[in-house]
Length: 358
Ligand code: KG4
Ligand code: ZN
Image 1 (cartoon, rainbow, N blue to C red):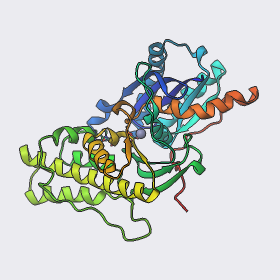
Image 2 (cartoon, rainbow, N blue to C red):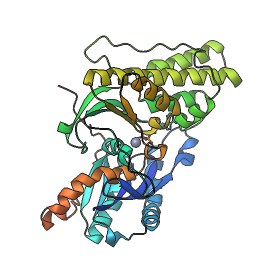
Image 3 (cartoon, rainbow, N blue to C red):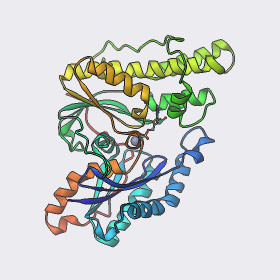
């Protein structure tokens, strides 16, 4: 029954959570820096690091208090080691190392995307435990920094033998495209939730944006920079920023084109891999248009879609604690000497989750 506290600070959210057994979320505290970065239209790395320093200890305190546990009650600590902004990662890592040292607890490091892929298995104590996708399944990881399709063989996804990269973006991530289009139109940051909201009531067929096609050996790869340029071309053609219904239609058309690409590639890969289950993870997975279009398209092929509730799609520490559970159980079952945290651990700002399929 491992009880873990995890810390996540890879981008602009400082988060801490207490999770039991890898799935039961006793608390999940998130301090967001959205307001701080909003006026710059995106995350400013140095400001992110400084604010993690301010928020880290209060967020850990909140998570412990909300779960009704003390640091002494924990079996282990977990922390996001990468990928992400190096300064931001280092703050979470230092706090986790200090707590592990002072309280003599093992410290498990987690890949941020392995965390996202675990979000679909989490639940609160008063909610039923979700069945989650069966193994193997196909996972679409779609966030501000990543857009990739993986074949996931087993629950512990850190080991590269248990996960295979099947397709990835060749340029912008999907969330990045939402953020850039929002900035281009002067709508603010982060673009995803703003565009989703402002596209409501728009005609998604007002603008026809074409799907990128690749005729090489990676035909399921994604590309979003052409779509971003297509939106810019519409703006330039009009000669001014669109307003009213014209803006709503442009946003609905952009969102639909982004969603169509994600859905088309995911369905093709699920078919190719012959899996019965697919999951979507990461911040963009909270988009309702994506969730509904993907569920319908996969259902038509007899494939079941699994998506975490929005609170476990965007960055949080519960997913990090959950993903750390396997390694924590191994460490706790091993010799006492192996339980001491490695205080030489460093951040890994660039860290592929899996190597491309052979
Ligand atoms: O996973 P996440 O919280 O952080 C990263 O690891 O990147 O994802 C943040 C990204 C941002 O680009 C944001 O615009 C996007 O997810 N996002 C959305 C929605 N909510 C967040 N994109 C589309 N629709 C949404 N509702
Ligand atoms: Zn993330």
